[in-house]
Each structure stands twice: as structure tokens, then as C-alpha cells.
Image (cartoon, rainbow, N blue to C red; front, side, top):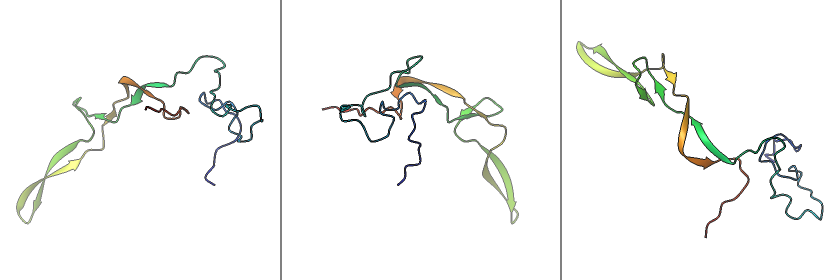
Length: 113
């Protein structure tokens, strides 16, 4: 129930050595906790960059959201309202993290006493 993934061994570098089948041989006691040895290059468990969540506007300002002030006339009175800008925004792109983080899919439980 809730298992939508395939039981076959994929190319994901953090997959378990048993392949996630659940039925291990009697001699493989710690096989479900062992990491797969990388075939080609070593994949570190750390994340050094992330996708930025902010945007640049046409002036070059950087922010999460941009608003523009519009004048609305209602019953003969002028009122200023803020309207959110959705157009002409450029995503920030890739941002380097100050300190490396551990990848969310890394299958090791960190424990401190």
C-alpha cells in the first residue's frame, strides 16, 4: 500500500545493496543498510547548490514577490492599491549554499547522543 516504485535496481547512487527487494539471503545480515559501491565516479552525499526561490525584475532588483502601485478611482475618490507583478520576472537560478547539506535521499540515519 503506497509503494508505487519499482523493485528493480536503478541507477540511483543511494540505492541499497539488496536492491530494495525485502527478501534477503540468510547470510546477508547487514545488506539492507549497506550502500552500493559507485560503478564509475563517487557520488558524495552532500548538496552544494540549490535552486533559488527569488526573482529579478526588469530593474535588476531581487525579491520573492514584486508589487506595483496602481491608482483606482472609486466613487470619485482616488485610492492606491498594490497589484502583484507576474510578468517580466527572471528566476534567480542556481545558488551556492554556505555550508553543504546532506542529500534528502541519502539512506543513513544521523544520530547524536
